Image 1 (tube, one colour):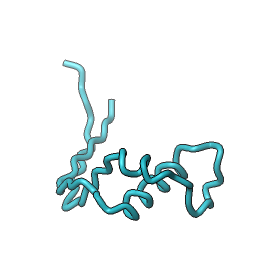
Image 2: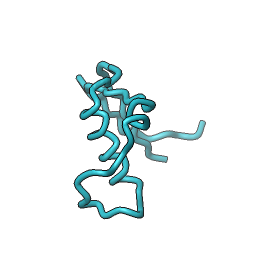
Image 3: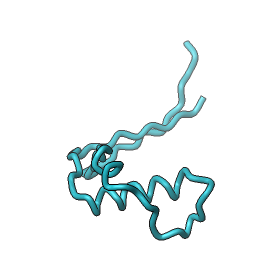
Length: 73
């Protein structure tokens, strides 16, 4: 059986900026919401909803990829 694995290295920080949180939510909404067009520029959120969400921003510093074959022993 063939396999692939990926390990990423980087820094995770909590995003506190309202506009950056809104941008991140828009990306997630476009990806996973079937109700909206993938070309929709922005979604409407209340300030309370943005404030209640935690966004973890990950800055990737490096990636290690491994491709191999698993054998049965």
